[in-house]
Image 1: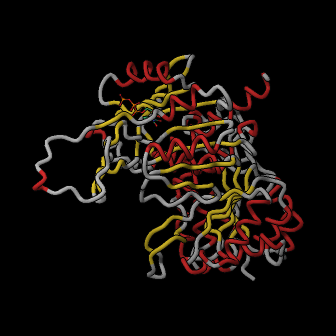
Image 2: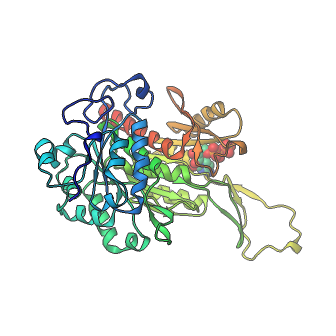
Image 3: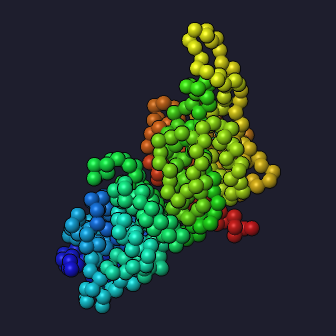
Length: 443
Ligand code: CTP
């Protein structure tokens, strides 16, 4: 057994240290600026379970990010995790005692595995190994981490991390489906180079992505979207001209996919209708892949009724009136291609007589007079909110990782600071959840 970490990192149980796990006092002006709590004086508390795997080092960044946001974090390390990160480092970063041992007499008397999770607002497993996910899915409790997961009455978020073969194995997918049915939320994994040298899905979500899911889950419980049906459009559409050419745009799908992921994190039922992108399908969303605007419209209409629709796709406004069956030849001396207008999907959803979603959110991609144009667009399209962004080439928004948006609704304009698309997605999901909660109270 690995002993609990040395006294130097202990925050004695029952004592309050500023910004610490047991601190429920008002925040300092310093961390108030970063805190996710809006007007609340409580410090939010995360119990972070770090399981074994090379990705355990990323949890160190996650701990720092949580602390920067004024969120208290207490850590539990599986025995395997201690081979990758030391309790001493984790304790120094979290500013709290680190727990590893299920049968530590002192811990059981003073804290107990049940109280460990009871004192948290959220339990996060990052990275979550295939082994720990399997234990949790089957209710096994033979070490501290798995015992907490069985004993907790708090929301649980897992960030899986493993080799691609393990990730794709039916047993892992079965376990995740079981956990999702039990209400466990998931963030990632992402595709990319894996530590084992292979390429594919299985890389733990980046700390900022995990942070965004945590922040969404830590918002007031009224912001939960459990069982709320949502539709998200994402990516570009491609309108064929001939068998090898199409009319398209530079949309990467990053923002739309991040919104779908953030809605899933809040418990929503998500259908993502997406044009061709390099973004991986968000786990636990129903994903419909389309190519053209007409296909996107058909998929959206088929998905109704939904409670919320978010149209983040960059839909091509036009398509070729005629698609050539064979490749058009240079020698054909083509003078022009005739274009016809595509259907306006956001406009159609907003104006639906039957099954109009309770909340319709559009995006406005502008290159000049951003807010003014977006205000007009909101009225013209009939949507409830419009998220305006400047997609001029120099902003790097199209295809980039960051965005700066203005949220426009009937009440006015909110100017959000520049942030990663993942962060913006998390904030938007929380705003949607809050709106839906108010609408159901009013109804
Ligand atoms: N949209 C849509 N169907 C279209 C065009 C746009 O659903 N055929 C949606 C987008 O998903 C976005 C909003 O409408 O939510 C605004 O898209 P944008 O490209 O900013 O505006 P357009 O409607 O294309 O108008 P314009 O190009 O004149 O700015």
